[in-house]
Image 1 (spheres, rainbow, N blue to C red):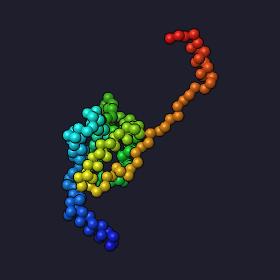
Image 2: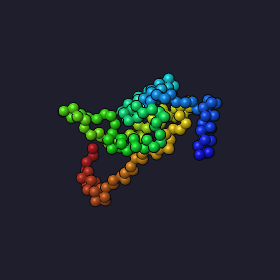
Image 3: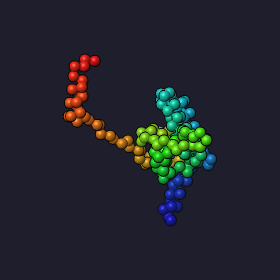
Length: 171
């Protein structure tokens, strides 16, 4: 109990000194993404293509899942449930059947999920830098690893067959 009281006093002291700013109660991830993407546009440090990609990933993969969440409610426990959901169901761009019902989403590759994390991670880094939150909830969550595939090589018999078929062909 004494430890919790000490932690509370330390947090209040950080707020009083301005090291941590209180997050506006209604600040959503949508608004935070808007701030982050506007900052990227103003900064000009990233190429136009990269900024376009960040918007695409934010709109298709981050906003449908986290957009309406309050920034302070996105915790390191919430983020890991999002990645497997993308791996299984995909993002917001889902095809519709003739009757208008949504068809099951296409599973996303680990690299697409890794790229989709970029605007979310960047937005929370901005929130930490600005003092809106104390911790980036994406920092401790491992990125999905792409599956390494072993290149398929021809057997000596297959190589020999190919060479015999190509014998005499000069094109």
